[in-house]
Image (cartoon, rainbow, N blue to C red; front, side):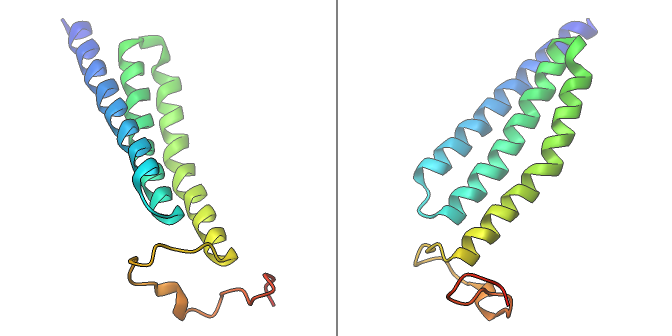
Length: 119
C-alpha cells in the first residue's frame, strides 16, 4: 500500500518537474533578452530538475539518496551560477530589453569603464 502511494507520488513529482522544465524552455525561447531568459532558465529548470529527481527517487527506491544529493547540489549551485552569468553579462555591456525597468545597477560605482577592466 505504501509502495503504491509512493510510486504515484513519484509520478506526480516527475510530471510536475517535466511541466516546469517545459516552462523553462518556453521562457528561454520566448523572452526578449539574456537577463529575462536567464531568470526563466534558472528558476523554472531548478524546480523542474529537483522535482523530477525527487520523483525518480520515490519511484526507484535505490536512487533516493542520489536524487536528494542531486537536488541539494542543484539548489546550491544554480542560483550562484545564474548570478555570476548575469553579472558578467551586465558588466560586459549586454543590451537589456528597452522596457526593462528599473535598472538599479546603473547607480552603483562598481561598473566597469569602457575598456572593460576594473581599476
